[in-house]
Image (cartoon, rainbow, N blue to C red; front, side, top):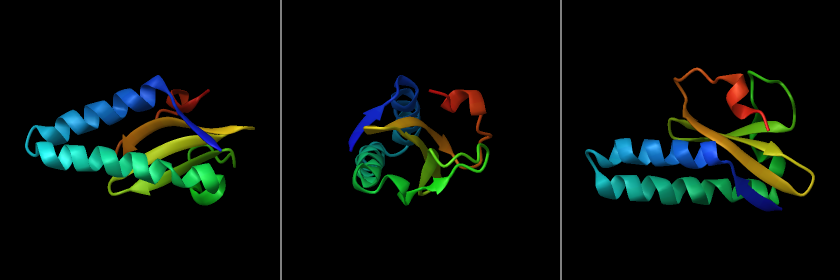
Length: 98
């Protein structure tokens, strides 16, 4: 399955990486690489992530990477990465609509 990233998800990854890079630039690069690697998992196993509890719809799933939630949606021919959030942040449901 093909993986696509929403503009919001790209923005969130950039924001998080910029925050990490303030103290540890190399750690930020490593974190970005790890997130992109983690996101490859649903390409072959789309249902690998757990159902997003705030939504309760089997199409909306999340992968956990460290303290972060990678929220995605299973679509007919691809997986859409919708957003990346810190686990302690409230997830605005409107943020993950397609």
